[in-house]
Figure 1 (cartoon, rainbow, N blue to C red):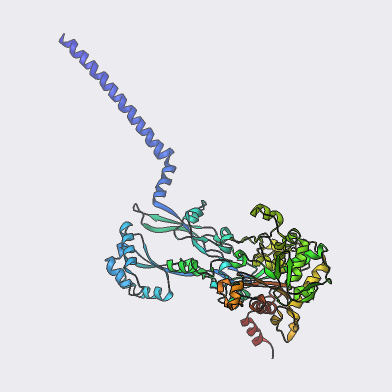
Figure 2: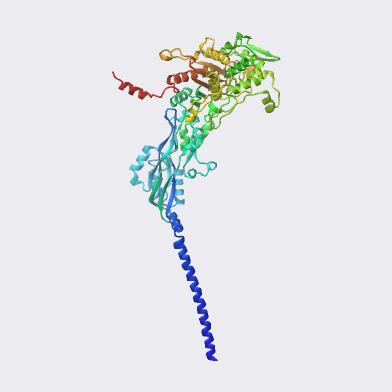
Length: 629
């Protein structure tokens, strides 16, 4: 019995040993298979994962494209920028290092505390920004004193620079840091410190100006410290944008406007190219590029003259008497008056119990259309507007560019307002009253326009009734010869209006007679400018105020004075350029706006940028020096 029991135990042991051995064999086989799978079949995948832990791919911001004027002169460029950083692990005693640095670059207690806090939060080998936009002198002093500034390094980059500063700021816009709402999936937008166009041309053409980012492959250790750069591929610079603007004229116009709250535009009447778009007061676009301080922002946003508003496209004003050409063309087209038919002006016009006055208290006497435009007789235009009604005037206004945006694409442009009977009923719930036609006839009442609409109107009159539209870029498609639509205005009607505009400046009785062109010799001797003055009433002096002695615009506070307007084209014998000038609260168009237009137009004709290549003064001197004697 004892032997049988031992035999059973041996057999049981052998079975268990065999099971264990089989299990071990299965486990070893599975392990071998797994190792084979990981080391042979999946080897490439894990090699890539390991490389990704060892190698970082970093995006490099590309240089932003330039904005150039019509002759290739820079309006927005990239400028070298220096900033100072510190690597905490190399900086020794951070407090002492920052104290030493502050003797070169003044650092306040707040700035130094910010650097210490950022250094405490980040890894010691990661640089911490101390100050941006160092001057060349500051950068050089830091480099000279490098032995006494452990861990302090200079980083070089690019920042946006606007050579014209204030003179083209509204047109060009500016760049600023990316907001969350700007994120579109473009990885460039997620780079720290990357800037995009926020206004003006910078915003319209931002995707093209932005360019394509480059890449840098760097080897890092387990802590993320960069060991070396393995490969670098530079990005593609942004495309340059060529504008129609002439930077010489843009600068001249900005300087001529000076401190006035004003706008001026100059346009080629055949191509629509805008040579000048100036708005004053302005702002330094470079301040936005580096980042405004709180005090700077308060000063700009709180200024009653609205330096942040591009008055050339966003300012809406009653056009005043500059609108009288529109009324005259509508009257001729609908036959409510002939050019030679007279309206008698005794200084006032009664319509029921309502009495409308002419700007000349004693009246102009018998007035025909040319005289009505020349002397800006309100009674004449009251009468033809009464005969026309608002809808016929509105139809002509829209053909000449009012009531719609220009299509140049700048953000903030306003469409103005051209009132009709239907508009008033829908917007105000009231019928059109006959007295309102009188106000419309002299460009006031509900009517609103922008300076860019005024220059468009003037260009369409000057070029013979062709639907030219303003544009800002000189691209191949836009510069191609594309026939302009004819607005269908009778040439003989345009000639009557243009004759009146010539007399406004040339005639002794013209409202802008003091603003004739002053060319006395050379090929431009005797050249003339044709134009039309306008004033828009902001505040009406009451009878009580007149009794108290307040009779002139200069007696009123600045913000209550009339707006001054002037539109013109030149030269009369071969029209090429149109101009519109607005001076907010400037008083009379003939005294405030017309002299500005004359000065700018003289410079335009002297340079004649639409027909002559640019020749700088330095080039003129060089050519003279090289000329044979």
